[in-house]
Image 1 (spheres, rainbow, N blue to C red):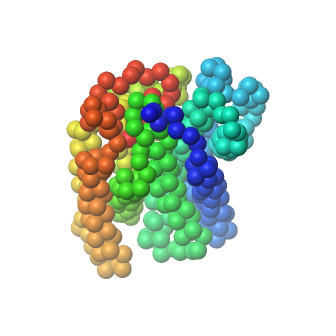
Image 2: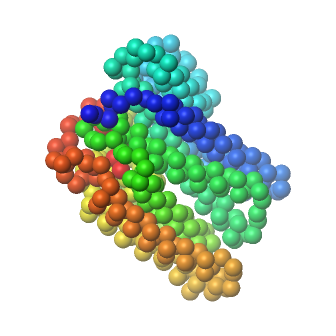
Image 3: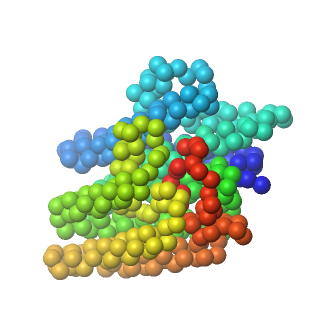
Length: 372
């Protein structure tokens, strides 16, 4: 049975509500933290905290508006959402909240109705997958940079506050939640792949992502502590990843301008974790990617020790080195375990990150989403 044929359960409805709470909590805690920094005279920190929120919000609102317009042309969207309404809600930066409202409303009606049409679960899962994709964009454009910034402030400037810790905790939970929720939503929305099982496979996949993204955050923080000019090297990594997206010739958006923005966003995500951007065989690119990432992660504490030897006397240096080593090892271990034993695939399916060897030509937006 295709994953899209499954019903939208009460548990999934509650998970959607929980995702909304995480989203609001993440944005709200960062905004409060920005205000706190400003009141304490840390204008630069306040500005950076706020900038990350605004950049992520503007980007995802642009994609959300474009997808609403595309769906409206295909008569998949609510007819009461006129172009003026769409412009208004996205100009007010509440497009994601509108999507949450629509999903919660439609799925609740489906749960309460005893005569749900066959196409209704597919529509609901499509809404959920669109939302999960936007949430993942927001996570890597806002939550991950926020974590790097806050860890840098704590380690380099020894500035700590309860609100800081709350913001970091919510951002971390948001990263874990958005990554796994996107993976599960996408797989159950595509008819030619098996749905991702819950339980151990989901836990292992989550562990793989968490234990590879976390040392990435710490190593990039150490590079910034070594020199703020290391951000130029990060920009170079982003540029290379973006060029790869251009070389792969992604065809995700109907607008050329948005397609370029999409490739830039994908490039930014690839700075922190690997995604299959076209649903094709990625064994070699993934292997090369993680070889580079591990080497880059390990280079951070080594260079910090050689070029800034006074850091060795700090209370954080050895624990961070140990954690980077352990977390990288665990992350790659969970990666190998997941794709060798737990990855949902059919008997005839080729090892192409979960996609069949002869995958249908992309017909909908879902078919063009990041695949891993």
